[in-house]
Length: 297
Image (cartoon, rainbow, N blue to C red):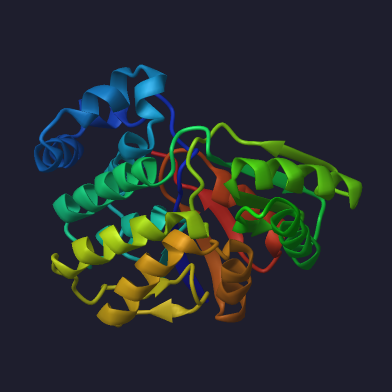
């Protein structure tokens, strides 16, 4: 029997998240102060007070979700489990909690990651859509057809669980993929309220920027192995960690496969730490071999 802590990605945010912990816990207060100081502005004000339009900006929400997730871990007083993992930006949170990247560097990296994503594709030129009810291979074929017809990029961004997959790419290709998916039996296919197309080939400029940034910070061996979005296997090697963080910018998050890999490795208990409970819900749809719960503080 083994256990794992998992950390959420973008979309879990709400204005006011973490505020009760901030008010009542001096260790948590230090987390938010350190993040504010690292970024040279009061991200905590946006997290606690909004407005929502500011919090949901990619450059704000990525370090914000990380800060709240780390704060919840610190407040819990829990020791590290056998493994850690994270969905997309959650990989950075997992590495921070496992002692591989400092809190300050994690905040700076995620701020840069968000800013670079916003720069890479002009607003309105790219986006994402969630497709329900199609298997991975079938949707992969849908993306290929949409690309052939439009000449634009359409990639699978998040393989979340059976029957729930997110695609990412150029607006025209995403729109066409939605139509083709419905024609091929998708129960639902709808665009998401995101102006950037993460985990797609359109993010190549971001990967270049992030490689430079990762080369200039200290990464230590994590105190618990992290299960990679790239390989779905545990990793502790520093070079492998860097490569995986760069790779995930232009490639899809293999969450369904990662959870199946966890089960095969003998992990029986999963605890989601951070805002929301998306990963807890996904786990139950992927396997019945893992008991998933949301950390309540």
